[in-house]
Image (tube, rainbow, N blue to C red):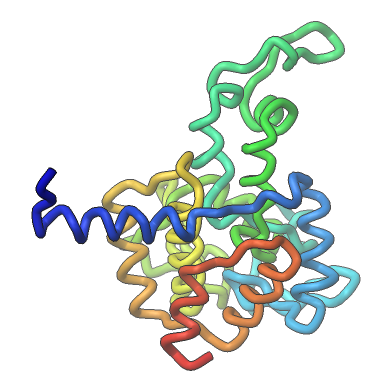
Length: 247
């Protein structure tokens, strides 16, 4: 069979994609993932993703100037581990999330579905949920307000959190400039790694732009390597940028 010159690059691209598609297969506990991040990844870099707010070993946060929140006041006082790619975005590809399962029944006999059911039944989902490459520290109130909203560029110029330029409006979120590259490379990693997750074309275009506009830092490269050592799989998107930057 004759293979056209056009087909060769396509075949090579397919092979290269599958070559780095190995995701988390070592830890399916979200709680364990959070503890490992706290103790072995962020122990010397306790700074939140969106607001660059420092926090100590007891999770006390130094909130940004002017930070206030009408809701989630208790969560404003604590650090939480945020799924940058929301669990719902990949969770909905699992049938247990969408439709439930015969074993997803409460003690009162009521059937349930969604995240709780997917977490209970599907190990592949638990691996994705616990992937530390997709988990970042965030002020709890910011995590709660961002919810599962997709990222976008918003027309509003007003921050929702004082001097932290995190904007949330109409079920969309615009993060500060300094966090956009890390967000982009996390989205790109999740798509490259897990067949269950795919970005929309609009979201992919935005992430490609943010990846270029906000290059990797030494800390992002160090974080990636630490997680790789703990979890057993690389974030090849971040690692390739680090290599190109000599980091």
